[in-house]
Length: 212
Image: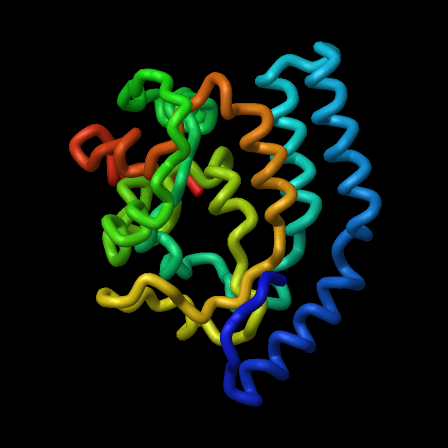
């Protein structure tokens, strides 16, 4: 887990207990790190296409976080995290678009790094356009890597409620930065990164979808 601010004793206790349980539930980091390295190396050596490598990374991410919701604050129907910035790359947007049968907005390729801080400010408190009226993600099966690996490892969902005026939150999350690095390595020369709402503006999304 990345460095985080101080918590109340009760919250910190729940974090420690949950992380201890997760350590027993999830595969050892050495195992999935080796798998991740093999995927990236196979892609670099043209033994995997970019599409195949991206899918493989997300399968590894699924294994790394599988069962996490059973011991953390993240439960089905909770959508606190759907009111903050979600950086998505072109490959993910196209995958989501195929699932929804809706064309994402096209952006020309640019080597300029995404303005993550600017996204956080702009979209903080703004509902994700893929969040349905029933509180479910319309594209949950193919949700972005950022969503797939975002878990509040405490037992307090109140930490996830997005303050409208603050950028930094106190949400203690799993440290999956190595997955983000692999994702950028695979996509940085062919994708642009935008907030998901820019790829799928509200007027292009069917909010009545009940898929989840």
